[in-house]
Image (cartoon, rainbow, N blue to C red):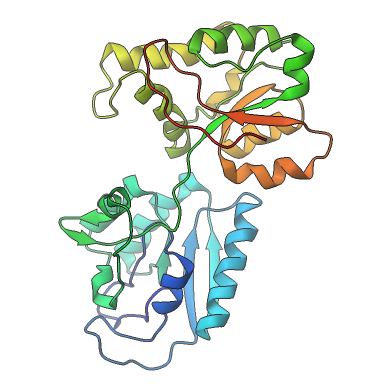
Length: 304
């Protein structure tokens, strides 16, 4: 993803929240100013993202490099941990040292747009037609579109097929089945289940499917539905089926625990699949989030 040409020094650098599709990114490297007039040739652009883990960092870097070559510019990529991104962006916005291109999670876009640091994408002639309503809504602040995402992914339950078969455990489909399966899969040196429960956007995102499937709403966390969803995680930790360390683990940490055989099941995303497939001794499967008896299916990933 490549940003539009730099704006004059008196204005903040243009920002693209999330990640713009590759074709869109190339089109935005045309050297056009905010008023649509031609500018001097851009030879390099700066980009800031939070892809510090592999393989995301390398994959995203390759996309940026390929886009830069197509557009005839050099892309200088900087990656910071997700928890550090927002404080860094706010500091850079205050000092007017923001990069040309910025990756943000959609919950943070409105906060950054409110500071006046973002430039509406319409000023660069970027066509947003064809994008789903939800993506456009997530990238919009006060009627102006500030960011677009090239993809939208979900998270799902991943499990070690060999461990489940050895313990005689079926893939859990409900919360009760999850607790039972996690308990039976837990043994010295291995937990039955793992999630990212750290106090960042990752932990929040991993919790949302449990909340939503139980009829909860992230705008009202004081409801019985929200309390029940959180209690499920609490019970898994208290029973010993899930490590207390999940309070500090990132999604990458959860992945590492799973690959190392220290957890039989985990919640994670499809971006982990390439790394999982590299381990020829690992026989994994993936499917829908376990849900409460009367809940709804929050989504699933393809089985392997």
